[in-house]
Image 1: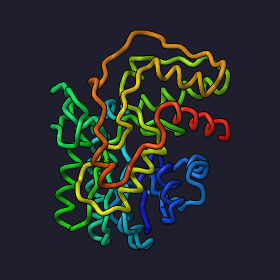
Image 2 (image 1 turned 90 degrees about the horizontal axis):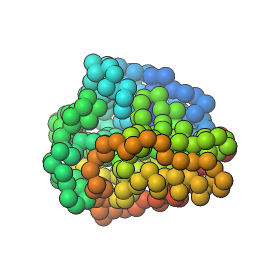
Image 3 (image 1 turned 45 degrees about the vertical axis):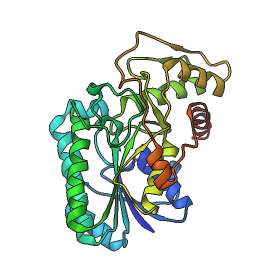
Image 4 (image 1 turned 180 degrees about the vertical axis):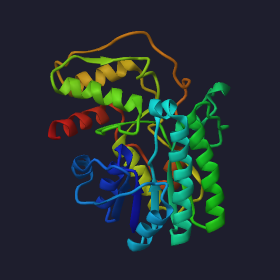
Length: 308
């Protein structure tokens, strides 16, 4: 299968690595790709420079490379999304519109969208693991953009007939450059990297709050399955199904880096409730099972940092 990954960040590059390892041909498309990072994570992959808001360029890439499936993960997230609302909505929403239009015009048969657990309405205070049928919310620009994109892409799927999978990721961490944002991912990266370098590693529970964290390699696996498998549903939670506390993060880093100076600083902040994502739909329909719970994910992350 020929797959276009729009966005060369944490999820896009780890997906390219996973998909190529499973025999697919991946083209990575990004406005300003970090070539060294892409090569380190994804290896020998075709990298093209271009704007997600440029329909002619996108359609040309899809046709020139006979693209079968698109994985859209480009966009601004986290604090960066809130700092520049207009740019966020322009890139996230108009980018999705343009990618979907180009896909439809180019005969793409599968469209996979990187959504987020933040689309759910946590003001309703869920009391059990959150399924894909839980009501959607979106009370900031990033979450609102993802909620809007899911609806818009659903309309494009109906119009052009391509299969659509909206993958709602838990908080993603791993070896990344975080140019698009993600305060949590950057904070986890900084803490683990500090421990590896023999420096004090500090966990700020206002940023790395109690939540559900999923390793980038598990996200990559879930995205690849969504490109490959027949789709009975449109939305899928991709996570671990387990909530993680700051104290557990400290324990995982200390186990992976014996003797590391790791501690929690400050008071806990707000978090998205006490319920994890229900990942049973992704398990039963896609065959997804997380391979890296927290301790395994941090251990692998440490190994990746040491060879980077």
